[in-house]
Length: 372
Image 1 (cartoon, rainbow, N blue to C red):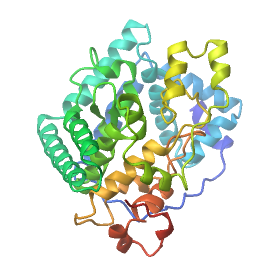
Image 2: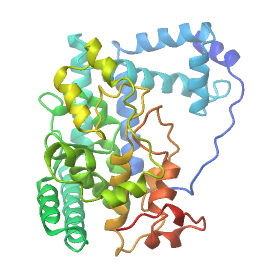
Image 3: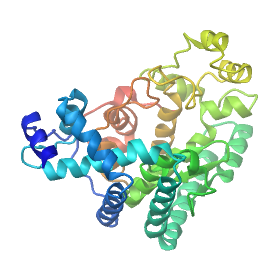
């Protein structure tokens, strides 16, 4: 009750945020997936080891009239004057995700066990064998399409064969349990993400967000991840020849940012980067990882932009509709220095600029079109 009163006095009415796309058409399983995910997360957040921490933090922030808390509520369009219970509930789930789950392993045995049970429960109940079979079928279809496009492309024969080998090496990765999986070091990549390419193992990591994709959206997303196996970063690491897509890359550079290396030498001198890390980034100028560039410093955008471009190129002979990338209709705030363009730019400057997509929109963006 005390938290409820504090929230009511702290916040003013919140206006609904305008949508940037028409209503997305998610998969049939999207709604049930979200319900189960939200229910399971709130159960975890309401456990005796987590709830008191979340509630105490909320009470302190509310008493201090924290601008951070005010902004948090506005971004979620939750009005504590009319929805105080919902506000407190959403806060618990947010706190549990950002300050407990993301810190796994926490070194508190009881909490770690709860996190492992939470992860394993979601994995078992959502990543069913039936869904894994469906996703693998879609993956093989996307792989086949990518191979066809490379085979029929104007690239040189030797380059084609290298790329074909890279595509054939890509596989899907599903976790069974948290313990012993690669997600032990990046648990939110499974809980909050969709698909992500792992260059160290030539695997596409599958996260729970994938479950909401409709069939066409899934195909495009899989093609995007497959393209990372031969993007400019991966090519510069493993091949001695020029990147076969240099012409496409130069075209995409019209609206992508390069990596900011203004502090690269400083990071070597101070020891932030080891000698081997420094040499790696010096040689591979479009690459990045979680360490470099640090948060807030610009990453190169060409790898993500190219992966979008290839997925659009691969669909040039396919029947498509307006729901082909409904995930880009979500207005996500990119962190400063992000390797991604905004979702709006990804839609219009890459996908909808391509000739075979142009009929899906009245807004013309032909000037951004990149072709061989």
